[in-house]
Image (cartoon, rainbow, N blue to C red; front, side, top):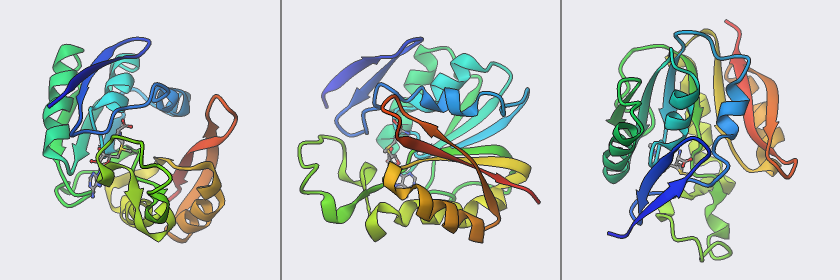
Length: 206
Ligand SMILES: C[S@@+](CC[C@H](N)C(=O)[O-])C[C@H]1O[C@@H](n2cnc3c(N)ncnc32)[C@H](O)[C@@H]1O
């Protein structure tokens, strides 16, 4: 198991070849949530990998609580370790879960996720990526996992709460329409440094 250290602006994390390596711009989630995060917000992260997004949030917003989940047991192990190294283990809990399968009846103020979204059909183009395949590729033109998340999120959100999904820029319109069918309004898209839509932010208004 090859272990690596990745350095972000405010913290470092450990990763290895059994877990998705967070890209250097994951702090885009910190920007996306700015202005809508509240004191005492309860956050559910789906597909946490090394825990980098939850750790970035915990480093920036102190009075929150996070449950970070992943289907990959190695991810949960390394994410826990990273939260301890970064002294945010009192803010983040970790749990193995196949999307919502192991989430109890709790309600959250935010669900955040960077799920697999590269179309499986395109996997040969991305063959140089060394991350585990099931962290990268999804069926249905890359949308299968995102659809599952949208379809189920309402059951786990308080009223007037948010769903933040990272995806490819060309998936923006289709996701807006899909989320509308399940009771979400699209509030805004957070762009990346190149100006491409990267995170869609949805609100449930019930
Ligand atoms: C693109 S990676 C993102 C990891 C991390 N959030 C980040 O940005 O560095 C997608 C993550 O989703 C997890 N994942 C894939 N399928 C899943 C499922 N069915 N349930 C929960 N997590 C899943 C993978 O193990 C992987 O850690």
